[in-house]
Image 1 (spheres, protein in one colour):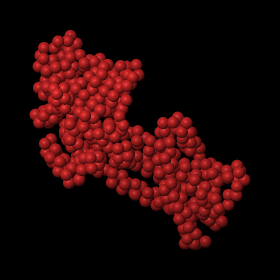
Image 2 (tube, protein in one colour; image 1 turned 30 degrees about the vertical axis):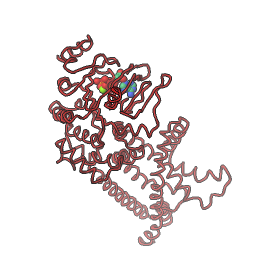
Image 3 (cartoon, protein in one colour; image 1 turned 180 degrees about the vertical axis):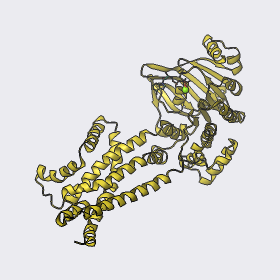
Image 4 (cartoon, rainbow over the protein chains, first blue to last red; image 1 turned 90 degrees about the vertical axis):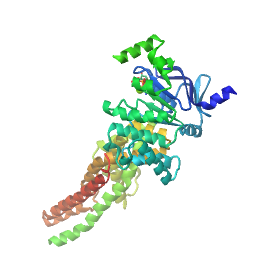
Length: 260
Length: 215
Ligand SMILES: Nc1ncnc2c1ncn2[C@@H]1O[C@H](COP(=O)(O)OP(=O)(O)OP(=O)(O)O)[C@@H](O)[C@H]1O
Ligand SMILES: [Mg+2]
């Protein structure tokens, strides 16, 4: 019983993930699970495999071994030590469950802001234009961008573009939203406006996994922090514990370097 | 021969020149897409053969290619080539220009950041939707200037059809010029090519403008 209710809470789960690029073992047996409404921050030095982890979770990279599940949909399992992906129909269903916000925004430059946000709901989810547009305008309002609906991405600041990208991801109504360093491509003065909308989403209990180098933000916004180094999870827990009282030497060293 | 007689003798040639021009574009623009896809094929044999094809098309004179297309059915297979002239011209022009267009398309597609594909994939767009909605419009915008160059070259290249004695405007100009010992036909032909290119440049400019709604 207890186990079942626990399972239904788990929106996303990846178990024993292995991934290598040639000789380079980037993910070495990593397991992460995220509950509904939870905000998980992933921190760690450059090259530790954070982006690779998100790219595997979102099917942009294929894993070598392990298991990936989105609530009741299993996307990948492992037989005889080798990852087996499900049919493309199953993967498509799983794909509807998540969204991804990229470091480089990756907006479609030839679409207006409004079209960037409403096109996938219309073309992929087959929503009516009216419904998709109303929803898109609502999201843009939430992002403080309703006056930019007719602009093109090239006319916006980086911070505005990233907020459009967040709206675009939310328009597909994902159960979980992944962020890969959403503010790393931004000038410091634009970082705040993006972090503000992420914090707003956290308050609304949006389930999120955020790879970030913004330590104070991670500490404030997340329910759990995961510290990765060298393709393994070194330490994980409550942000106050991980930041305030890290147990592992590598975590301490990493956080020390950050404070300088 | 009066000026107006010369002009009216040359007008059918102008139409034939236009026919070569438009039919070459009609065949070469889509054929270039096919050549580009073969060039990017996963199978090394196919991409290798296509690479050699492109290298030959770009590395030898178009005039030579026209002669080969026209005469090889006779020299290789002893087939009659009467009535085959215009087909040979279209074959030569279309394949040659398809090779150039293929390389332009390829450069255009390779210039699209991989993030565009990844964003489309994560949002759930199909491969087909991704190509036609997301990638192709951006490719067209970036390659238009290069296409313009090729199209302008094509206007002038149509005169190479004279090597197969096809009576387009340049061949006729040459004939009249030698029979009448007059330079005027070349002037008429020159003005014709210039005006044609001016129109082409104008049309392409308008097309490029139409894609300037974003940057
Ligand atoms: N497509 C790829 N091909 C080969 N190696 C790759 C590829 N992507 C990542 N790597 C390697 O995997 C390792 C982890 O990279 P990853 O981008 O996941 O690190 P990261 O933790 O996100 O770093 P950063 O903080 O700099 O973004 C690095 O050694 C990187 O060189
Ligand atoms: Mg990264």
